[in-house]
Length: 299
Image 1 (spheres, rainbow, N blue to C red):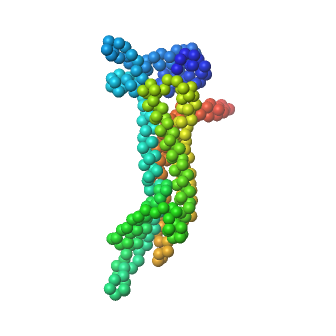
Image 2 (image 1 turned 180 degrees about the vertical axis):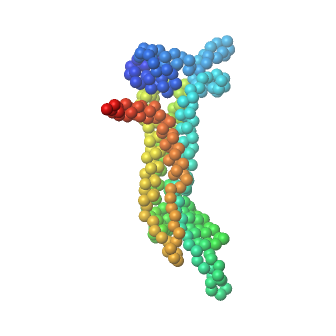
């Protein structure tokens, strides 16, 4: 930014930028502006010599031409984009995972001799396990030592006949909502990474994207983060409260169900991701909250 652009910002905004860059926060507004301008100058990619001439290259262009040692890397920016790339990959994994929710039931019955049709004194363990994804579920049936597995759709025959011990519609609704939220975050992350690459190669110098850079940046990061946690929480609430019942086997089946590994990982990673991206705003809210608390009385 130029000196004029920095001067239009408030002292609080300038201190937020300084804090993000790890710079001192002391001094008047003019000192803060001067400190940011000096930091901008020192963060510019190193000047390189090429054919006895000097030229300033955009960040990624400098890296491609002269190696990573030719530029100075902002640690916070590197972590922000690195974690965003990680979330991009993790969202793709989540969209194809069948570990968002788990449901299983089983019981033990007497084995039958296939020749006589009489009980043979052996106990046969029967077990059914379902792994729920956002658009389909994986089904595994175990009968003694035999195991079969298949994939079912929420609008398939078994769900349509009501032949499952759980409400398919509830899981279908939860999966659809979460999928929409994840796709929204995925597209926003693509926008962020695409713009970052374009800026790194100096491809964005003028036009709508440059003129509205601040607004696009705020909206893109907002849509890349918030839908992740909203979709995950909504899925957990709907799935955890989905109607379920006993199977039709002999006796009372042993039923167990709960949120799967993918749900817990998405919840943890998305929460950590949001906390890092908005760490300064969160800290500012915390400080404002603490400053609003009434002081303890000495009486």
